[in-house]
Length: 373
Image (cartoon, rainbow, N blue to C red):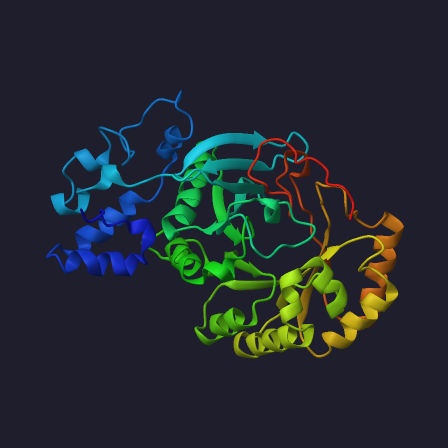
């Protein structure tokens, strides 16, 4: 039996074309999509104790039963899969929230709700894989034993369910970063489908400039992203200022010298303009010396960048962030060697609920420390 068509797995215009080919009026399909994507009433999917609003398409009595749309648009709607929400954690420290979902084959998927300084605004940090094969030494996600790409609908469903929760709280989603579990560029096509649903006016209508896709540095995919002129922001995680240290932190990176990665960044900046977002995880006594700052200055010479410094949050205790004095010294060195470039310390929140960068491990309890190598 052919599975029902799932709008979460397709670009909105492809969904319109699919149903138009069946003789359905395109205006009806667009109205269907406008109703299909989330409202605050969807939040009852997250809390079974909440009253069931009649405008939820996944519940009996929802808009799908009102015969507002051609029957062929509604066929199979109740058969579409959903991620199961397993737990919600809220940090008492900074109000970051972590949603732990479970896929139909039992794999964990985590989404983080990031409160922004702008009143009632939230950015979502979504996962593109369950687990991650990039094996970053400081990342708990890499230690998950089972790994796979997420389907586009699984990425979009994170967004739908998280957005429903946000709207129930009287807040709104203003951005989305693909920085959760996994390497987005290893799941390129599905991530781009999800991003298109995010930004489409008949999807979730999020500004493309508020959508960021992160990578540890897959050069072929960066070049593809550039060639296809994708409108989203690109963030590249460097990890280190030299190839040997970077290979220690990101073993897969040993295949690609930093000079090749930065060459791809230059091609992207030349085509796109503006500044390239670079992320740099700061680790005490490893990648925050004067020499590291000097090497970064040479590597990035002439490339407009926004340099984001992130303190490592390693739940296993193997790596530690620089002390305040070390951090200030490194920042000052960067300012000397990257004159005129914005150097920003990015806050990685939710550490107390394992929602910070590098701590997503598919669990609602902290991972146990590992023995040192």
